[in-house]
Length: 87
Image (cartoon, rainbow, N blue to C red; front, side):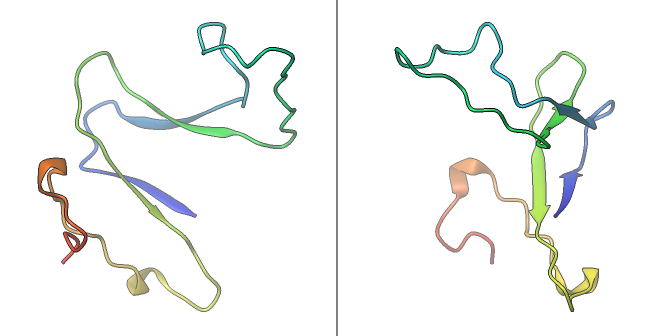
């Protein structure tokens, strides 16, 4: 998987975190526990405090394909999304 922040704001960087519940996350249902996730990491985007509009492109990579086989979709404001807004 190739992951890219498109038009990344200054200071934006990928990071990683452990797949664990934080103390301020919503509680699990009674008598439930989180299952361990050995060998798993969570991809994070680290940013300085502020307001941002982020575009993150996730491109799966398959054998026999090159980077030129993938096309970046156009940027479409959320308010204008349609079923064919990628055109």
